[in-house]
Image (tube, rainbow, N blue to C red; front, side, top):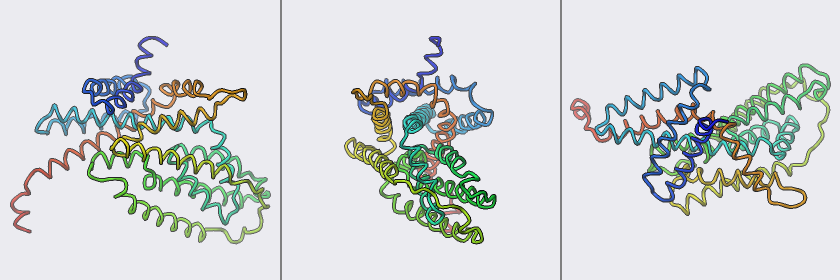
Length: 357
């Protein structure tokens, strides 16, 4: 790789490091490194983006610039827009490191097999719950992981040779996965949705949002389960052969892993007195390094940290390019909504509104 290519590849890692050390030290110079690095990153990844992604990026830039041009202090508004853009880009990239660790994990495959092999009475419950839990780590990648596993596990032979059973299983499996994934923005403290909300409304906390979010997720889950039971083809009951029962240990281990990552995030947020999205930038790379190190331990000894570091070092060319479209799509509306909310709050209402009461 040429020198210029290396600069392009390491632009986003430079943004992450600048934000990490900048948050710890409060250095304004590191803040400018993050801002410039994010601009370099967008320019470097422009040619690799699809047409729709380019449209989203351009729309985001135009929206942000329009908002900046109408601000009372345009230069300060522009710096704030760049800060939000850099933060969300780093946030998504750090979550991408968790996906790097999850992609090659035998634990993920074992959990997926366990979820797929459940009997019809429990399949919706396990697949929907599993899709939500996996989505905390993998985000939309959970649909690819469980989708491929369901296609492999749901063969015509496994359905006893009955085409109707095979089709019904496939439909119900994918519906359960999609409904479970739809709950991720509500239940995940590591998601981009929460990051955008808390950055736009800094007076809010996750603990203030959680009761409403979890209640909504529970309602969605129960309604989904009821619809699944109502749509179950009664005439196909008993046609498929019994499936082999697998041990739930991999699923228990994965739940423990997710709980550990979430607990680490909350602990860092408490110790550093920062909001959860900021803590994610610290906890996600650390969790990914530990997870990868555990996977890459040598049988003859060694912690696996070196191999884990090499895997993370390859992330800039593997998982980071996808962050530019996502961060542009999230940052521009986030900044515009934040600015206009403050703008409207600081301006008096027109006379005809105040007269109307």
